[in-house]
Image (cartoon, rainbow, N blue to C red; front, side, top):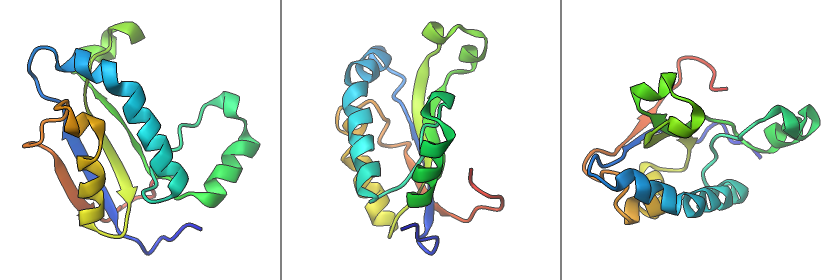
Length: 137
């Protein structure tokens, strides 16, 4: 089902820096993650499969067989490098995805709850087509 001919895109979506943005991010995070799970299941935009050793290699191989695997996740503040997990601060999102068009990726970003609820700074979001110079894990 993977179609390597589809363009790849880089998305950078930093959070607003105003007081309360981090709390808002946490309060709607489950809805954001549920939506991303739906997008992945539909294959509309394919991004990171969150592998964990408990998943097992057989299940990982099944997933890799059906989905193009990119990378994605939360951006952390520099202070988070030395903080325990509960002290790490999320400051944005980034991912590489595969889609039919730039407009499809922009629409997906604009329909995300982080965008709608003002967690992501709409003026600073970057969506660009890209060509990977190295394999994308």
